[in-house]
Structures are given as C-alpha cells and as structure tokens.
Image 1: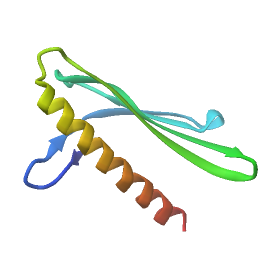
Image 2: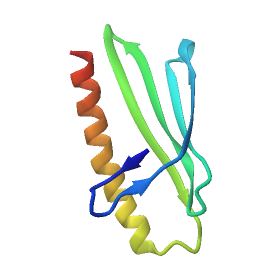
Image 3: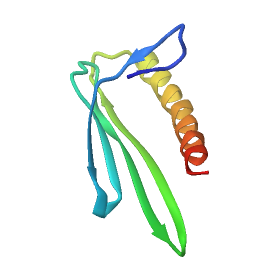
Image 4: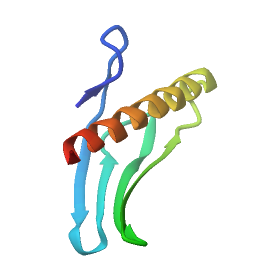
Amino acid sequence: MTVGPPSDPTVMVERITWDESAGLVVFTAHGDAEKSGSVINHLEERDGLQLLTFTFNFTYADQVPQQKVDAARQRFAEISVQAVRGTIEAMK
C-alpha cells in the first residue's frame, strides 16, 4: 500500500495476520531495509464498550538519519488519526 501525501508517498509491504478470538489484527512490515515492526489493531469489549486500540511499533535501522525517523513518527501520528476516523465511519 502507499501512504502519505502524494508529494512524498511511502510504499509499505505488510503481512497481515489475525486472531479473531483474541480480537487482534497484526500488520507486520515486510522487506523494508530501513525499519522492522508492526501495527497492531486490538478490538476488545470493556465495561460494555467496544474498544479498538491501534499500536504502532517500529524500530529503525541505525543507518537511518534521525530526521527521517522523526518525520516517520509524525507521519504515523497522522496516519493513526486517519485510521481511527475511517474505522469510526465504517462502524456507523
């Protein structure tokens, strides 16, 4: 998939797995020389409410400049807001 603004897109290849009984969907980065890790979506019911937690968990290789890591953190923060909004709209 391609994420980010059209002027600076990022292509991400992921392996997607799920465990329905645990309420988990895991998107694991695949074939990325700069980073490893995953995005975890966890759906659970607590106190009668359906909760969906997005966890972004990435580690960058030592050769990746800090400026690029900081920009990626900002992009993931923006993506997470979009993911939450999109999920809420889909649930409506």
